[in-house]
Image (tube, rainbow, N blue to C red):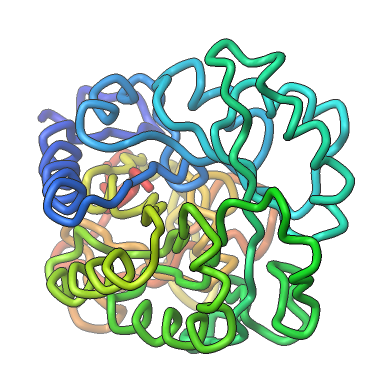
Length: 341
């Protein structure tokens, strides 16, 4: 592709790489009999949904608007989880979602009758399948508390202490989501903690959803470990197994093309780009995270080092410090990698 012909800032997605990722996920579905769902909060380029739907089981949403998107643009299995639901939203969600997962038993009690009666308002005449999100209180992350659902005082999921066995009537599934860009060994650790506390309830369930954060399409991902875990669950408990990867579907499949608008100097040379960490890659500020840059190196590795920043008025809107083999000039284009997610 001729990057210079593109208007900037511009996201570019490589359909071939998306397909390669999807082939890995489709093989996992077929070999292990599990269900893979696109977590739309990680990738929601709906022009590709018809293609994605050829490989995996469906979509999962974080609220009403993502649920609508999955329902309208992919039209396969459609799941939703949110920490709480508004009543008006729930009236629509029971019509378009196959699974609705509640963050607390109080939320389930509030909406269980609406879920039970959902068959009357659904086109398929099937009632919504209800699940409860579990917090296994097993943290496997290091240094990224903002993305750790098992951290101190987390609002996400029901702990063992708060679990209500007496309110399980009508509940068909359990859900946990604790990972972020992690490998299968961390999932095994999490499942073992979950099984120790909640495994006895799986014999009463129809499905188990192990959430997202699985980097299944990463080069060094422990795919055989994942397959072994899924087989164990399906052989031990009478449940269907769901996984909700988002990044894995679009990993290493996209680019962000940006232009150098100006170069200023204050202690060091600073590039003013027409792309922004805050606007285009917020993980840079939230995690923090240093995005890969084509032909860019760690600061100091090469002769010419620059700080990459943006056109916004946010002083801390800085992408990072990079070095280059050649000097950068106003009008040059820079290409960030792994930018589809």
